[in-house]
Length: 299
Image (cartoon, one colour):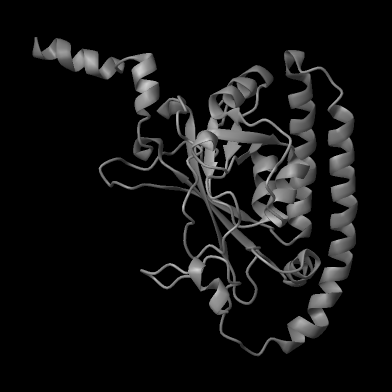
């Protein structure tokens, strides 16, 4: 494993790509008997749902984007089928909560947790597994992107990806060739016109959840205002097998995932009070109204 040691964090010793393992226990009955009995029908149901999902998405792609007909149709499809797919994989209950960096602001109380990501909003999140992608499709039906990689000329640029492409990137990240990358602002404008938010994965590839990878400068030059930025974090709770997918056989991972009685995903939304302001957006929009009020009071 020495050839992989360059990925290990020198400060903490955490390796972001190794499959996390829990201490072994007396789980042979569940692993070798009950697990396969659960996995086989679940895999068959997951395959049927996936075929139906991507077939319907392909059919609705011919709808005109005017009046947001395509987005509304695909939103309904993803809401039903992606949630059904998560249920088949054992994610019965997905916990959502707010997080904060400073205690001076109370936690938000709005429902649903995280609020509504509207047209042209930006969702920034970590990446642990293909499960994350299906959850985002179920919750937001966004425009997926993958960061362009390749030096200074790739800063702030992304490639637009379909749901199929986003799942493929989670399973096997690849460098996209022959396509021209777009600035993130251009993709946000596309999201505004079609009614969808935009998802960005700054880490580009999946990690095991033990730490964050060094992010790509995908947000460089982005002018999205603070009010339209949603920062989301995924975390998996597990006892034997982690749903995080980094390396190895996709089928073996999915088989073991479906072998577990239940899987647990926690989604944490950063409070908007703790989202850092965007200097570029502030420069474009000018000072906030509260600044004007404070200035008037001093006069």
